[in-house]
Length: 216
Image (tube, rainbow, N blue to C red; front, side):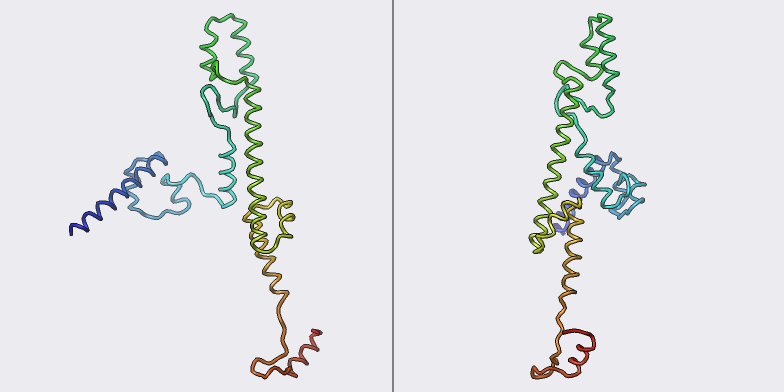
């Protein structure tokens, strides 16, 4: 009984940690998670109680993840996300502040999200573009490497260039390679006119059927 109680205590601790983690990440009250009684919720059910944001296909999930990782983020003090930032509006406001000879220009710039350490708007745009290009190049390189590895393992190296030029993902390439291999196997079916229970001599019936079918 003592060992069982100790084991139950450890299980409860793990469950509590799991609940707190889910509640924190999903921004829910822990009691909401406890009330599920470790139930299984699928699709819209999970969305309705806050355990998921939306229901997507596999390709949709990949697209969402790709969009998230390519989205510029704040990386240092004074460097801000330029998404949706009105550069013209900012420059007009800056001109207005300078023209008015406002003695507290730096303070107002800080309120707008720009400090003395920050980059200029155009420089920030250039930085974001460079980061996006780097990320895109990295993803492209990983895709090419993945397709080459698949083709090599499947003994279909000749397919690699075509799959890459088609712009297929690694998963799509895998499906195409498997289909090609299956079609190849069917096309290489072995025909035999030797009876399975004979001593190795040709079976006249099979020979005749083979001739009628035009098989040499």
